[in-house]
Length: 348
Image 1 (tube, rainbow, N blue to C red):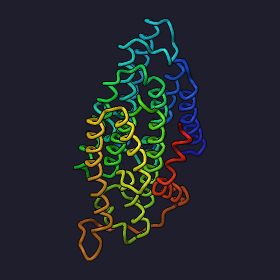
Image 2: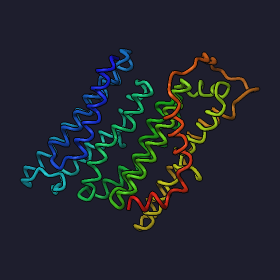
Image 3: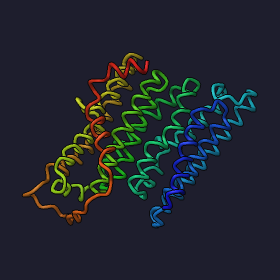
Image 4: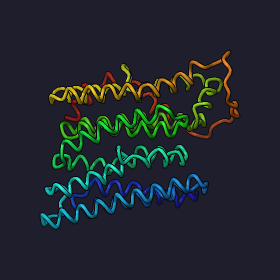
């Protein structure tokens, strides 16, 4: 892709998200979301592969549907209340419709069906943008309006997403689909606590972005998209293989890695709010997710020689990717747990 075109598209991505961050008016927020969608569409279709074009079409249709629902919900709310302000979402029909639209935008279950299919059709770097940057603007709007949305609806979306994210990833062999289901599960953790402690949602979002970036950049470095080829990476870069296994366990939420911090704090908050059944359900769904991360770790680190693998060993080509971002994200994805009191103090 032409570097000038790429610069314009990435700038538009930043502009769309910033516009939604800064807006207090529904139309401006909607405009920011639309700029975001239109900016990432050419990035998704840039390889001109049938799978990429299909993924781009699916993404565009779902995002356009969600944007139309947001516009309809905000118009309904303005018609009922006479106010276009984001903070004044007092009409229950409009708030439910708005939450459904934003759930469709970020891929919360049961509106998640587009997410694994779209991510599977993209290359790893565009998939990384879709899994991290594209979640920021809709989550900002959910945080701003969480107090006006029905708590039962938020709890239902959160629990369903963690269940579907764990259950859906069990039978996958494609790494991008596994990361898509991982994203759905993490979104569920953020949504479940958003009405009680929005700062914990921000902590969970930050750690999710760090861990997912480390995972995607690792796969990009080792040029791996399937579990079978993941099993052959140990001979090419053994140190990277061991750090990848730790990053995957961090995504699963095992102590003493960074991924344990948001899950621990969210379960603690749910217990404080006297929701023991919800907290127990969330902890059990985390175990389902942990299974497929352990499966990846097993394929990477425990199936090495002298065992035979059925996959063809890939060419040992040198990667052109800079290793600094990967190193930074990997270190933060593994070692932030001791910083928990500091992070809590900064966010509360």
